[in-house]
Image 1 (cartoon, rainbow, N blue to C red):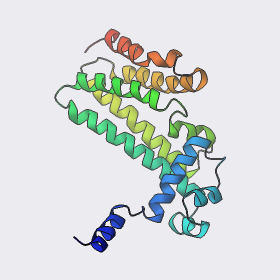
Image 2: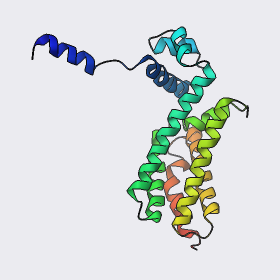
Image 3: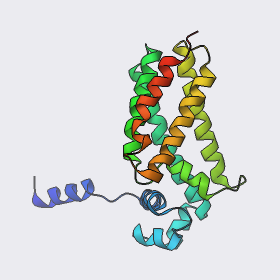
Image 4: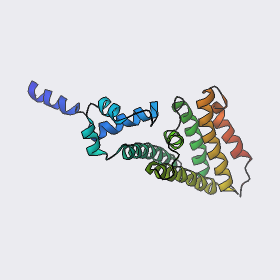
Length: 202
């Protein structure tokens, strides 16, 4: 293989993401680390190595960009939940236990800034804002999946158990933001397993 051909292939391998993907990845990172309100489109365009005209060509407004960022976060999380379902598809009880392990590890991963969608809900209280639909649909789908796992695992009050686990998870996220990973949030998995163990079976 000639040097010229090898160099061309290396360039293709190292090809930068398309402008839209670069803008989206940059915005996700900046919104998550600094907050939605604190980050403007100028900062996003500069960090993404582009300009506002290109940004607005791909995202008609900052609100549309925010919604796309949150949708991307939600899709990644949904993919994780699907993997849990598929890995333990023959044992609903193991699906629930595997989810507990997953969210316990997630607390450490999110320790610095918490849940991107929960943060956005706090920053954008307007129920008519386009991102609220993304947040509410995602959180509702998470709760509904928990209910399915609890019901399939044979618990007599699946909605009640799912509600307790869901609220404990959301509370742990806030606790870790407030007092750090050494606080009560570090015991999330143990607390969840205690709740599951003491819930009546159908």
